[in-house]
Each structure stands twice: as C-alpha cells, then as structure tokens.
Image 1 (cartoon, one colour):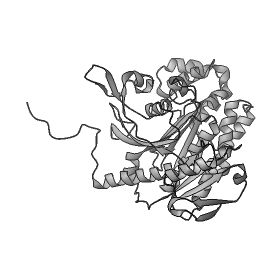
Image 2: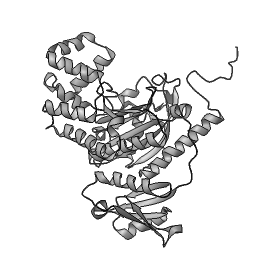
Image 3: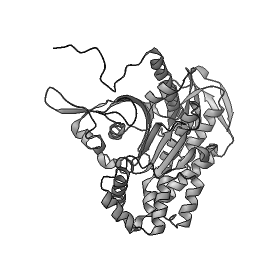
Image 4: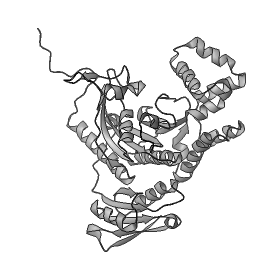
Length: 413
C-alpha cells in the first residue's frame, strides 16, 4: 500500500515561528484584559461525554465522536457553549480561558477545522444589565487595545425583534423557527405563508430591520413610536445600551443594532454580539444565556454570558507586540446600590494608573481585613476599597501591599 505523505488533513494547520509568536502575544494581551476586568483564568477540557454534548443541539453533526476502552462515547467540543455549561456546573464566576475547538467541516468561511478561541465567561450574575454592560465594555477595550480600525459591533436581542411582530406569533420560539426558515430557506412556502399574514406596513418594517443596522438612538425612537417600551426585556435591552452609550466614548460610532445578524438563536436567548473588522470578517462573538440554567441542576445560577475571540484570525491578520510587566490591583467591593457602575469605575481607575495593571475583584469577603489578607495572599501590589461613597468621588486612593507596603497612590477618576 502506498504510504501517505506526512501532511496534515485539510483544514488543520501547524503554525510557524512568526504565527506562534503572534498567538502568544495576542493571548498575553487577552490575558492582561482578563486580569484588568476581574476575569480569573482557568483551563477547561475540550473532551466531553456524548450525553453532555447532546444537550447543545448545535453540536450534533459537526463534532468528532470518539470512544474510550469501556465503550463510552466521547466527543470534542465544537464551540464554547459546553465550556460555559461546565463553568455553570462548577460554580465558576468571571473566567477567561483559551480553548481549542474542532469541527468535521470548516468553521464558517475560515480555512480551518481546528481553531483557537480565547473565551470570557460571566456566570451567576443576577442583573442582566451588569452582564451585558461588562461584555460590551470588554469588547470596546479589546478593539482599542488591539487597534482594530473601522470595526463594527452588531448587537441583537431576539425578544426585541419579536416584539415588533408579536401579534403574528403565539410565542418567541415560533418566531425563531420563522427566522431560521427565512435565513436558510428550508421551507420557503411556510415562510411566505407567515409573511403574507403581515400587514403591508409590517412587511416593510420586517425587511427594513433585517437589511439595515440601527444606531441606539434610531432604535430608541422606533420602539417609542411603536409603543413597545413597556416590556421589561425591551427596557433591560435599551437600558443597557443607554448606559453603555453614556459610559463608552464614541459608542454610537462603533456599536449598532442589527436584527439581520440573528445567529445561534437556539443557543443564546438574550443579547448577542458579533464584531466584524474592516474586511467584514467575524473576529469576536458571543451572547447571554438567559435560560441556560435549566441545563444544570444547581438553582444558584441566574445568568451567564460569554465572549469568544478568534485567536487564529487575529494572529494571521494583526501585528501584536509583547506587553510590559503588569502590577496587580486588588479591588474590594463593599455592598453597593449601583452594581452596574462598578465595572466602569474600575475601568476608569485602570486607565488613569501610571502603570499597566491586572485586576482582581472581591465581592464576597466578609470584612475589610479578610479582603486585605486575600490581596496579600494573591501577591497583589495595590489594594482598593470601592463602596457607594467612593463611586461619588473623583479621586480614589490605592494602598500598597506586599512589596509596595506603606506606599499610597491617588488616582483621579
């Protein structure tokens, strides 16, 4: 039998020295942003039992299936959803991790079947606006840190889209099925049957929303005109966008609502986000899992959200330089009324520090001394307390710990 040449299967890649250096530098930047945002790093397996993988219907037909010596069926992860599920089951909170995914066919339009993603996960958060605003703030920081010129972030909340046409559907899942048929033309007759039931004005509105991106102000005005603003989910969505618009410079020049980007509707049930570069290549994506807690047994889980960065795409397209060493700032958060303001306050402090930093955030310690001892144990360089009083100030004091013990630093925010 003719021996095969020592070549890799189609869609699988080795990385040369330059590509490997780029990947390492990129992951270091993403790791730095993890530390700044309070995302602790973990390493999660990409090998699962088939029964676990079957919980995510989107993986069926895309995955590599294996078998161990006892005949138990195993599978390789095809995306980050299983990692999120593992994080929920293990009671992880804000985490960052690099993961490898494999599919039996090429991933989207990319030239590979095996690829890397750096994933950020937020788990167990009771307030939707906190999860959403944290991820949108993180997206903006990644874009700025990596200097991705002319990028666009497309946001979608399927329930908001559904609310415009709710009178034609009995429930949200029926609307999702209609969109799925519309996108892939699986059943064009059924799709047209539903569309014909729309009034002429609603047909025009549907195609307008599908084919156009809207600024936050344009969507706000449209919802107001259609008197849809009484729904709690719509209020949550618009409230998050208004908050981020006020806190993130040039938010409306970069972030848009695009209901034509209705991706992974069977995975995400809350806000979704897709980030495209100037060449309209998808480089980051993610969403919020409102009902994901039904897949795990522990009742503590309330919300989960994730953001996945395509490491391979970045490493091939962008020049990423090595970063200087970081100093660790440990934030102790007292019980506060404005939880959504915390991330923006921490981000302001980090931006105005005279050094590059990584961040650890403590919401759980019982008192100040316990928190300070934890900061010392984690080898932090600086210790900061933030409560309602600090949120109202324009100056925050950092107290040195470990090698900086006895020193203090005031930062204007």
